[in-house]
Image (cartoon, rainbow over all chains, first blue to last red):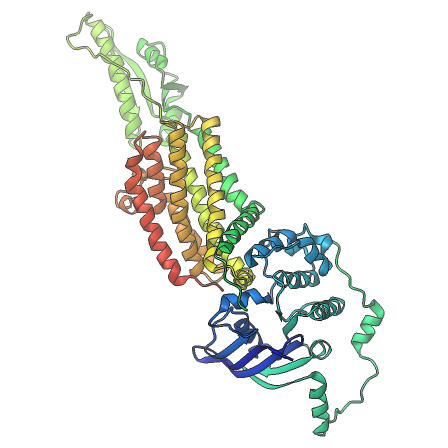
Length: 254
Length: 367
């Protein structure tokens, strides 16, 4: 498979603080690539450099073969970006926002079609602030699809969502991925990384500790003789919760 | 295979963004309050209080001779209101500033008949005091002349009245209100608006698109400009239709006013962008915005003329940006001057604007 993203010796320094400390990794076309790490590990900074939103201190980032430092405008056309906060004008309706972003990407779209893809067609006339957390995140993802990007970047897409909304969002991400879009996402949830990502980079203190698939990570750990102290449970609390409340997505009536 | 970057795209993006930024403003209650409601309320108040005529209120002691011809003539004067009450009560009123003065006539002697006109005025109100003195002296002089049998005095006064236009308070206040609305829209809207957009990552999300930052900023400014023109229109039309605000050259003055408003708004927006760069959040923006707007609302001749300020403060007040705008507008409205007379004030505004945009370029941060 082709590498759609190549990051080489990437460094980002703020005065005397090094947020990203010489990392290298590559993302293959069509995969869901996760950057897993605690808060402050440098995940968002790495993502924002790839998204052309922050300048890098040294190193190189190629997206679809294009250097983000040399040709940021060509990169911007090929990517979709979702940020941590809802990031939309509070007094503009969903269809209007999509129409505005279409103009900003210089493409022609049918806003209702895009809303249908993320199951928000009945919220077309709503404002972002009237949406639930899960709906806001779905709308943010919808907005990444406007320019038919090759890669979309999702920054902690399920932070703050309830379990049903998370599962629903994962399904949506898988659906978009199946349609051929490469996905790069950050998360600090282990279950999310394990269930959703094809490959993971584990990051801490600005460095990538290891990159591999979730299964290989676990296999390697077990091979090294690691044993968990507690007996593996047949079910966990999340299974109980979802069993009792159902995995059906629900949204507050507005 | 790289797609050729299309320049035209920025123009489409500019207009579409401007449309939605404008819509967003119309849906924001703060725009409505500062830009429309406040100026309309102020103008209505000024339009109503502005029409009272200056007058002298004269107290007549109830125990004095109220039938005396001098008192009768005094009561017939157009601008005189009289009030009859016991003398002690009238003196209290004078000290409270409610009366311009007290006039009484006392009988001195019978043969020859002699009278004395007594005038009590307040030291605190020299203007009204001299008004009363002039009035009473004139009435007494005329009475003396006719008592002396002089029917044809050697000096006569011939009065000629020019059909002058009466300047009402609304004529003074309305230009100030346009300035008030423009400054509010430019500063409150821009500072709090941009801080929110930065904090909520709205700007950052827009920078992830191929639309240039300058296009986004211009669309922002453009949408505020349209809003400001609408505010100016509303205030002017309300002033003209309801309160008969005077435009010396009719429609031409109207267009000149709109033009001045646009220049002023562009300069004021510079202040907005500068302060949005200085302040990191709403909490630090609040005092900063008040620091810039409050002194201008008070000192720039918005509510009362700069001439009423202490002399040492006037040179400073005169160079405030809002003062330039107010002065320019009054030049072509109340003073009936030529549009070319506004040029020095416009240059002042442009200079302020240029300095602010330079500072804004230094302090402005996108996130």
